[in-house]
Each structure stands twice: as structure tokens, then as C-alpha cells.
Length: 385
Ligand code: SF4
Ligand code: FES
Image (cartoon, rainbow, N blue to C red; front, side, top):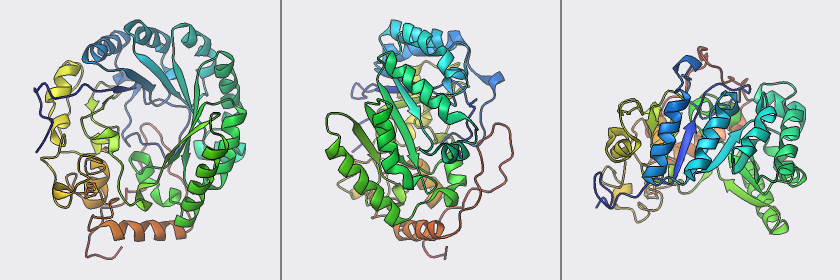
């Protein structure tokens, strides 16, 4: 039975709001989970609309706001938006690349009541990091930014997205987090959505590298207990069971795009048959309860076998809908990352093959460019790779 239905008192409030303030970003990371069609500046919501959205979020019961993008500090009103979060009692987390104008705005963000900073680092070796991020001289800017964050006494999380281009640096990321005074490090193996899906063959590590990275993290967790918390996101393609993506569809998170479209997860727009509502037409509360996109895969009624009768169905909620669409061609299918999916062995085989090949060049994330490499097609149970 579906425990959650719209317009019922049993519908819990979302915990977090991911506010994608802009898709503009000085970095061009090939693992970005943003959509291939990025919103342009001319279509971005204005300050007053974001403030109204944040007010509605607080009213709905949201606790955390992730100020994200793109690079959120590219917005001229980032300080005003952060101040609004503080006035509303919303915990604000700035998800930033730390480059461009980020450092210049940091003290004002602190004064406006910013609660937490999450800084991305693409690599440990500067040349490698700057190749991945597609921006020269980014590394010293990031380090200067991190230094100021800790001087201000703001809690710092480092986020490292791991793939075959930097998986040899996992130990180095841990040392770097300690050196920069971070309280938390995310060792997040790439999730293949958006630009990362197009770049999958360039990013896919092999199983031995993945296992080694997990061992390094586990040893460091012991060694650095009380000093550094390390979150590990394992790569779906090598997992036994999938993650509860976004905490379960329509259960915990709302994602507002720069243009004001509200999504149940950051990659939901890839599911073309879904109808998304905009903050310009509906309140957040209405969207949370009634938007067709949010109700489509909420709960368990929509599930097919093997999820439908699986005793894990209210733990992982069938995995990731966007990955099910990309890999199985059906957003309501069991996520092929799950070992119980009929496509799972194909996924493993595919990862093995891609990791063994010479990596193709990156397709860098760019606004308004035509992607010159097609996204990989879905898998078929009875067809060769
Ligand atoms: Fe989760 Fe579905 Fe796999 Fe069961 S079959 S573990 S519910 S994805
Ligand atoms: Fe959309 Fe996982 S990214 S459900």
C-alpha cells in the first residue's frame, strides 16, 4: 500500500530545498549532474521571487536550504537571498566552487547569516584538478576561499566527486580536507546523470579502483575519528542495492531550477513525460502535494516487479527513477543498479567494458552549446552491449 498520498495529513513536509539559483558557473566539470540544456541568465527568477519561494518553504516546514547552481555566488543578490534564509530561520548551505567572485562575497555572506559552506574540489594535484574543472588557476582560488571560511569559523565540507580521472587521489583528498580544516569530506563517486551520463566512458573507474577507494575511506574514518567525518557515496554501477535517491521520490526534497521549475530530484527533467509545475503558477505547498511530477513516483503504488513485492521497497524506494529511465528506458522500472534487476548484470558488464577502454576526451559542461557526443542509449536484456 502506498503510505503517502497527496492531500492527506500523512504527507510529511520536505526537509530540504535545493535552490539552483543559476546555471552560470566558471567551472565546466564533465561530471556535472545539471541538465544538458542549461537555463540562461535571462530566464532566472528575480530576487523577490526567490524570497517568496523561501518564505513558502519555511511555511511548509523545510529546514535546510542548499544554495546551489551552477555557481550561486555568480548571482548579484546572493547575499540578500542568504539573509532571507537567516531571517526565516532556514539553515543555509552554500554549495560553491570557491572561484570567480566567491571569495569577494564570503565575508558579506557570513554577516548575512550563512550557516555552512560546501566547497567542491576536483582534484588534489592542481594541474589534474584544473583539467577536470576546465578552468586554469582554480586551485589557488579554492584554497584561499577555504582558508577564509575557516578563519570566519564557518563549518566547511569538502566535496570531491570521484571518477577515473582522480580516483588515485582519494588518500590525497582526505589529507587535503584535514589540511584545509574541513569538518566533513564527501567522497562521492560520480552519479551518472546530465553531463556525467554523456561522459560516462570517460569517468567510469574499474572495480578494483573502487574497492581500493572504499578501503582507504574506511581506514581514514577510523584514523580521523573526532576530527573529520567522511561521507562515502558508492558508485551505483558497482553496488548491490541502489540508494534511496533523493531520500525517496517526493519524500524529502524539492529542487527549484533557476527558471523556477520545481523538481523532485535534480535530474527529473530527463523524464520527459512528467509534468512539472513552476513557482510562478503554484505555491510550493501546492506543488509538494499535488504536482503531477511529485505524485508520479511517490510511495510504492507505481512500482513494478521485482520492487513491488520486495521487502526493501520502503528502504530504497526502488532506487533512482532517472537512472531507471536512462538504463532501462522506463522510469518506473527497478533501478538497474539493483542486483535484483534483470538488467543488473548488463550494467556491471558495461561498467567493466567502459573502464577498460582508453577514456575519450571530456565533453565539458557549457551553456548553449550543442553536445557533440550522444548520451548512451538504454540497455536491453537480450541485446549485446
Ligand atoms: Fe530496492 Fe527494488 Fe531492488 Fe528491492 S528490487 S532492492 S525495492 S530496487
Ligand atoms: Fe532523479 Fe535519482 S536523480 S530519482
